[in-house]
Length: 155
Image 1 (cartoon, rainbow, N blue to C red):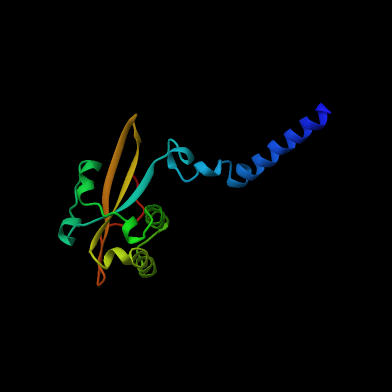
Image 2 (spheres, one colour):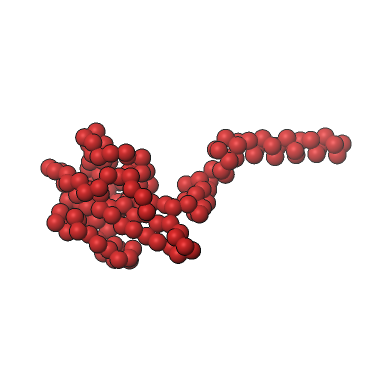
């Protein structure tokens, strides 16, 4: 009797493990969307849209992440997911016409109202110190795009 119950428990645990962990490359899937769990210890990057004119975007030199808050554009009211924007920029190799068109389509609700500066923030540990670097990538409006840097760069 106990042997049957033990077998059922063991098989149940194995099936649950296979569904939740093994099928998601070793990650427990609810944690995979949080970089602190899925990519702990690795460098990370996020992309933000800032409300800056083109001439200021090109020389955007922010010393800290706190300085960005007064220029950051909230994406949720525009029906744009922060994760979608960051993932799109992260996966882009070059700013060619199809990539820029895709970005403009993704943020079309935002650029209907503003011209925006797309910046990328890379953060990582260097000599046991957290280092962040903020770089402008593009300035985007409905009519034009000004490119400053390719999407892939190293910290």
